[in-house]
Amino acid sequence: MLVDDEPNILTALEYLFEEEGFIVQKAFDGHQALMKLQSFHPNVVVLDVMMPAMDGFEVARRIRHIERYDDIQIVFLTAKGTSNDRREGYSSGGEIYLTKPFDNEELVHIVNEMVEFG
Image: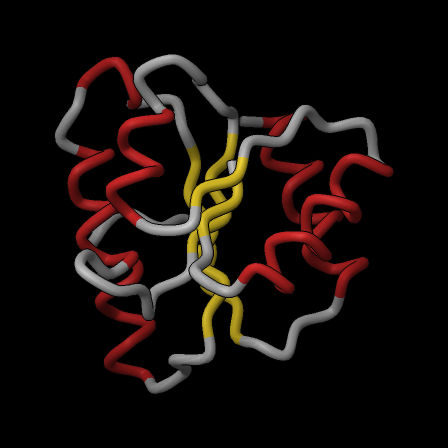
């Protein structure tokens, strides 16, 4: 699942992951992501931090508080790159914290590893 409030980024990421054979669901904000999780159980959520109404840190915390989502891995992909941001990302439940701009190959490699090795 891809979660970002920027349509261009979502479209680019969707193309990138579909080319790799992934089934992709997109959400434009945190509320929509949590709603889609009720019917779509992804292996990995690629999550922006800066979004309206509910930021990515809060989305991650909510995912982590639902037992049936224990196996979902979270990759933060964001422009927020301070050490405090990174700490909050990891403490809210993220496994990986990448900053924008990012390397497409690195992101795909990370997600592939997460899917393959859990």
